[in-house]
Image (cartoon, rainbow, N blue to C red; front, side, top):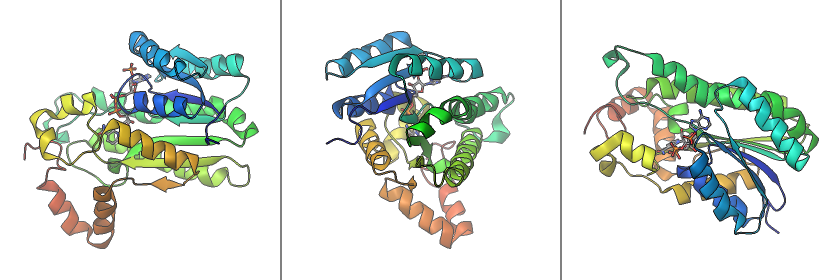
Length: 262
Ligand SMILES: NC(=O)c1ccc[n+]([C@@H]2O[C@H](COP(=O)([O-])OP(=O)(O)OC[C@H]3O[C@@H](n4cnc5c(N)ncnc54)[C@H](OP(=O)(O)O)[C@@H]3O)[C@@H](O)[C@H]2O)c1
């Protein structure tokens, strides 16, 4: 039987990109879905495709950076399904450019709000329900949440915060049956990613949203702790651990420098 059969999954950031593919993979496994994001039309289209796979789907149009919206998301879910088995936090975005080049740094606040506080707000309200079910918490993070990849300082800081928060929560939830899985993705060719990087995207080895979604569902299904799906990501981490100074110089001059058109 599929791991997520009848599992009530709140998927935050479900309207496009990796989140859209996560919705389809979960629907194929028979999960009962709550799909959350801001774009109503896109969400409804994703929901329709999921329903055709025979699962129950609720769409919640919401801006997850507002605490009250997260409370409502949890309340709406419990009202509809009576429980929450899994919170899958996929929403996230980032800007590129060297910190020294920005005249206005307001976007860093937005990155922290979406990539970090949205997760914290959702879990603050959802955790009692997830605990009741001995459920799963799943966070979609980035290699930038482990290593300081240049050109995305605000984004990386928010993903580092996400990592620290989830690592702590994992330990705090020991003995409750609740598990915390964090996935550290390398580049994935979503529309947002291609738009942000432009021509440079072609020079960077990248996965597809479909493959990224599969690796996330696999890791979540097995209740893994922390997972780096790509070979590039694994090699980067090992090199950085062994030779941090050398690796930083290498990154600065490579296609992993998101601020430079190399
Ligand atoms: N693509 C990559 O190369 C890559 C690499 C490493 C990690 N990641 C991580 O993977 C995740 C998905 O990335 P992606 O490329 O698939 O991004 P994406 O295509 O831009 O999708 C982001 C999702 O988050 C939702 N979202 C954004 N702001 C929101 C808000 N305020 N409230 C509710 N939902 C919001 C978006 O929907 P609406 O706009 O409709 O709200 C959308 O569904 C992110 O956490 C990202 O950091 C991506």
